[in-house]
Length: 375
Image (tube, rainbow, N blue to C red; front, side, top):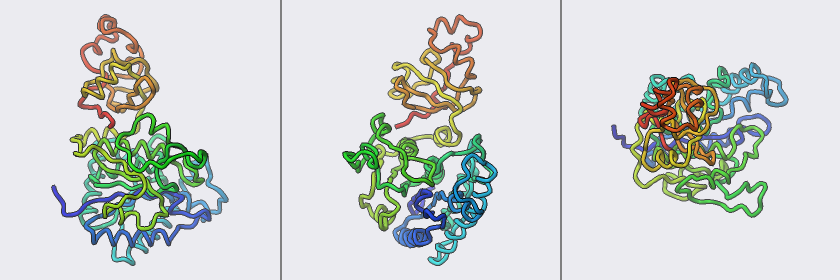
């Protein structure tokens, strides 16, 4: 279905939306609402992915710092803080005649394909109705097993769910540098990235903020998935004036991650594999297997696996790493971890001749239909 508008997803970090005093930055949210109104006039719809619930929740509950390691207290802070954050968005956007809604997600909601599709349908309908969804991880109920872990990943997921035209991360830094500019004065700003390789990933430093959970590396990984999906993304400073409106008008702001000229034909199921569930383990493959995956879109055969990390079951999502350790693909395992570990490093005739591994001689470890290769 074609629409008469474009969709922008904006991800806002804790340090941008919550001040050092633990109070919501109402001036920032008001400015964001002004931009949302301007974007509407330019033919854009906005989806907000906002951190900050825990950061503004712990002061009102009497904590002098975030209660790290105390899960029930963190969940309580998230519950109290989410009300404060949501009220601020609602009031500031309502003052500009814009309606917001609250969407809270966990991995439990997206790891299953049917739930993932239900979340997609709800978000698409909200955008279609002219609502500005405000999305966050549901930290009140999350534990490690169902956490996204950072809202950079969540923003990439939401962008794929709503088929966004642009995903913008408003951060405490104005874009990507060749090194961490807080530590290296010779670091140079990178205005455009056409391919995320090992060098780009290595240049990503940690966040300097004390209230956020994701550093630059999580933003790079999210941008890599978005590039694979054919979605442009930008990392820029949350203090940059009218950044969203300027980007909508085609101006250069921050670092642009620009995918191939034509949107890649990635099946929705493969995007779900990339983002819906976390990786339950990983396999490291040899050079030949890595090249076959990346260049030819081949299935992953057990004979190409050299190492297996983690415990997982058939049907779980895995990362596929090349010999350097870089994740080049993600897919659904066709065998349990102990089976693949037993097969790792063996020749094809050895796999076929072992009655415990014979099935792997006839089928791939990850089938190409259940494998997404990253751009």
